[in-house]
Length: 328
Image (cartoon, rainbow, N blue to C red; front, side, top):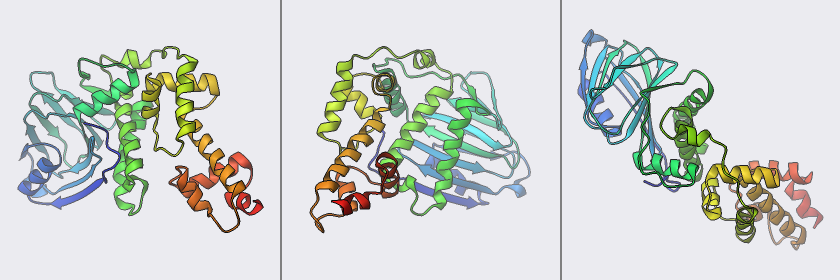
């Protein structure tokens, strides 16, 4: 599954005291779930908020009462972490894993999953991750094919370090539900967030490729850097991301980033922005009076967010774009 950048993010929200209704909502959003109330059924009142990014589905779930849930074979990776409370997970014949506010649990695409010991009033993040999309992102980072999908250890730390950063990004995605015209509703930006969440999971958790991801990237020949520079200078308005630039260079993302830092003192995307800013300035300086606007020129050269464009322009040239146009 490709990490999508052209499909709108879908938000959903549910609240119900009916067990069958919330079971149907969870099944529709994630996977088929058999759900039983273990405590006082009168305390049961479920809420679910879902953000569907395409390669990932993020949910926040609460039941009010103690519950037990069982799913069949998932087909996707699944990460669960309580904001408050706790629960246990057992997949197939594997040992039981326990999740708490500082500990996430990961389940594999294969095998039945039993969720139990769900403390009353637990508030839980649940992230479903498409298997093919995660493998694709891993291959981009490594710059080579992988013949076995990642096999994760059953849990990882989200209290500190990269795990906490990843969880913060998960939380931010859910908060965007209440922002009517927020950045996550822009397909291109949502595609970047998908990539960041996929990469973040690979860099936060333990699996057989972790050492390879953390190893120093191999050296990159200057000709490969030049290949990217030439492509950007020829078509600076293209909607590049770092994965596309790495494909042009025929190296991994990490190798490309390190090569640009070493050779140019900037990231590949900063180089893209630099070339675009130069093209904007050149066009503004030669424009005949009344023939163009700053907005038109900025859009022409690939700047979709005018506020950030103006900030970058002023930081680079010491004046706002309108001043450059007036001087012309």
